Image (cartoon, rainbow, N blue to C red; front, side, top):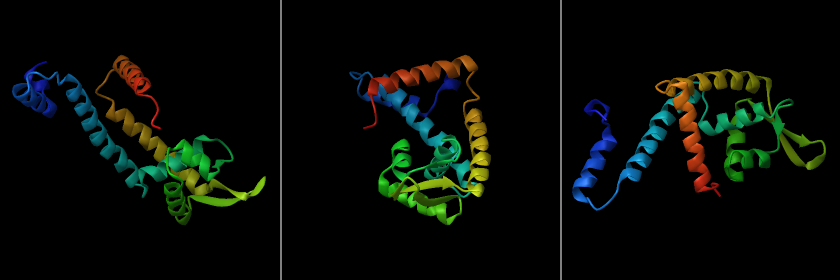
Length: 168
């Protein structure tokens, strides 16, 4: 790697190698770069949602409803499970989205004790606009990689995730 390819993690790695030459800090450097990637890309991703008055979690709800297919409705517990969110956190998201006119809650016709959450027409229009911008943004974020490099990165991340197991 040339000097122009060096990044902030290289300096940290060099300092640890100097101070603790007994440690193999390769893993620390890789995880450090992944963490920096998460923070930098996360800010760019959040900016797309913010431009539409949404937080990431709110977009996630709208997107889950949209990709569920017509009639674009799910019950809150399915949404919470799908998005790995707490029931309380989901209630807060749904309250904000309902107040904004993007979703509506209604009694489940099959079980009057249950509730369904559905996209409104306004919510459907918004999520279609935002998901298009979101995909374009993520494509831009990965533009430094060639198509084969993106496939290889995807493969490697899948292997790491499989080795770590589920979030639970």
